[in-house]
Image 1 (cartoon, helix red, strand yellow):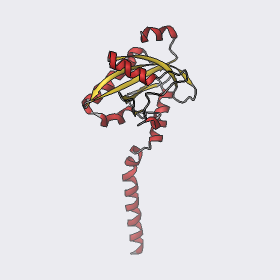
Image 2 (cartoon, one colour; image 1 turned 180 degrees about the horizontal axis):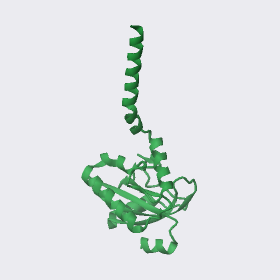
Image 3 (tube, helix red, strand yellow; image 1 turned 60 degrees about the vertical axis):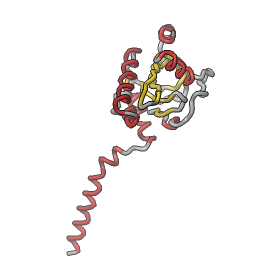
Image 4 (tube, one colour; image 1 turned 90 degrees about the vertical axis):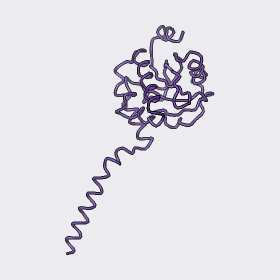
Length: 188
């Protein structure tokens, strides 16, 4: 009798453990998800994104959010995200300068970045909002670390104003180390 209770207990324990495995795998901490996203960026960095690739991904991201709302921010991070590609990613902030979703630097989420400066003293989030407000979309260059790096590199990002659920959001995505002549053509 005692042996039957032990076996039943072991079987129930095994069922409980194995039934929760998919849930445990899906519930990643922000740190784990950021690291996974960073690794996906690094793994895809051998493909250089073109300006058109970046524009297309930002447009797709905007369309997704307009259709499904801000609850789909989760679709912008992780190794399987279509918005993590060619060594880059999409981030989302609002016109007040608050970072709403950064897939790698998640500690920026909720922070006001309008006065944030790059290593050259440029207030690039402020510039991004200006471009989004005045033109609807455009390019901004600044210094920012590549995924996996500590030191900043020259980056040029496409930003687009996206209306989602009555709020104006800015979606952005960029490329690193583009030749200066090509950057100048984009930011005109």
